[in-house]
Image (cartoon, rainbow, N blue to C red; front, top):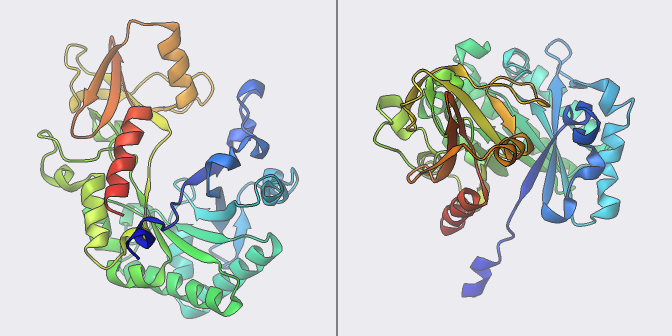
Amino acid sequence: ASDCVATKPQRLICYYTNWSHARPEAYAYQIEDIPGNLCTHVAYTFVGLNGTTSQLVSLKPEYDEDQNGFARFRELRITFPHLKLIVSVGGWTHGGASFSKVAASRQTRLQFVASVVAFMEQHSLDGFEIVWLWPGAPERDGIPADKDNFYYLVNDLKEAFRRVDKGWEVSIQVPADQARITVGYQQQWLCEAADFVHLAGYDLRGPWTGRADLHSILRPRPHDQGYFFTFNIQHGVASWQGRGCRPEQIVVGLPMYARTYTLKNSTRTNPGSETDGPGEVGPVTNDPGLLAYFELCELLKVSNNWTAGWDQKAQAPYVYRGNQWIGYENEESLAVKMKFIQSLG
């Protein structure tokens, strides 16, 4: 029986963003480019929530529907029969207002749930992920009641899925940030209601904090003072596990992109050094403070005068040159984080 423990199926969830197809030709990332052989699950991000009708809606109908995004996503199963397909609702640009509104009453929650069930059937999906960033956060249009309402929303969805009885899974994306958890998440109840808890192990730091740093941090460092001391993957996992989530229920999200900064003083290059805002934008993504992994590879290939560093506690690499500083993940850092994840079951 002892070897049964080890055979819990490992989940490797790959996220597909429905805007990456719009990049210039060579860099356009199509659904057909998804390496389904490398993933156990693929999540299609993002669909939205209409706060007035409480219905699930497409945020990019010109792609999801006109260019058959949803249908092509479903067809991944033809090539990869083992693949489980998830759709994620919400995301950063979506905002929290409509979630807060829909979660607020049983009637609106059930309207939402009914539209999710219809959507799941229509597109023969396997799982559904709620990415509400973040319940209870006033700067994201949240209210104190969100904390309980979010749980009710997840539970109503779980109950409806159970009745349909097709093995559909409910996942929720949650933060590692203790302050956000306290304000918006009934951890104990959510661990019971959700099938999987997707812990965001990325964007733990960024240009918005005014300091150059890694954004996927395994353990605290000496410069992590106060609030930041517990804001890391190790603490996030412990927080959810300590309040009732089973180890196999927790899925840690890791970034496949870099966070960039402009240093205030180019002689101060340690993680935690002061910055003057985001780094120079990438030629393809054109998104301040962010570089796609392929853009970073190009940068490092074209010029070898970057200085490389490694943060031992965060277990992640960084590079700097002049006043530019970039924190990212590579094969080595992902391997260390995988070991950590597997060691906790």
